[in-house]
Image (cartoon, rainbow, N blue to C red; front, side):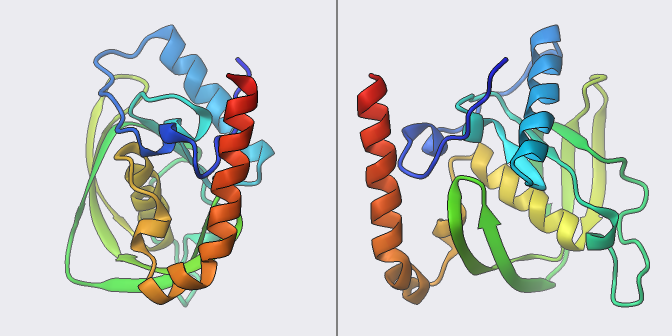
Length: 187
């Protein structure tokens, strides 16, 4: 399976995912290839839409050093990486929010400060078909929120301040045009 990254301007990035009813060999293969693609692109998360698919699946591989509090204590030590999340749903779990610089593989060289919940409630299905309901904190919660947004057709630029969007207007317009030109050439 050859997966290619889809960039801003590709309509698939605005497509809502469809629920996975059963774990099939194809879904397992997709998960494996998505993990490989995420690693090849030096990412820490990847959603189906970013590789041109619409199944409700995302993968996350957060390095241990990014999942610690100020004292170096792991925040989510009981999660094994990489994670494969099928049909993930997130809900804020508390009022704590934090703002941090984010990037996205579908927006090369574009970063912005985004505010997200520090703690979330995560509901998802594993590749074994198990239903999981867990609390997640910190950077892992941030990455999962970012990827679940993708599955809902929401992009990180949708969370940017109006001022930041204006500052990036030219770069976003160029990226969208490059993507649309590439799509037209392959149609």
